[in-house]
Amino acid sequence: MAEAEQDAQENKDPTRCACGSQHFVLEAYLEVDGGRITPEPVEVEALTCPECGREYEPVLTADGGVTRGEFRGYFEED
Ligand SMILES: [Zn+2]
Image (cartoon, rainbow, N blue to C red; front, side, top):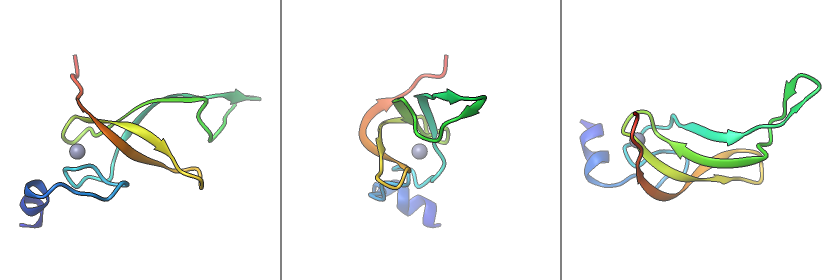
């Protein structure tokens, strides 16, 4: 399976987790303006992968996206 190969060799794509997942949860402070959340976060704390529990430093891209930065370790759920 392709998944097993991705586990063996760490994924280098900054939009994907090392486990191959492209789904992240961003921990951030968001600004609310007139009842609307502004798309640009005030401050970003962490980018975590719910699939494997890896936590990364969030990196904001010029086009308003978020990619993974430095790997910080595994986050603990409780
Ligand atoms: Zn992951």
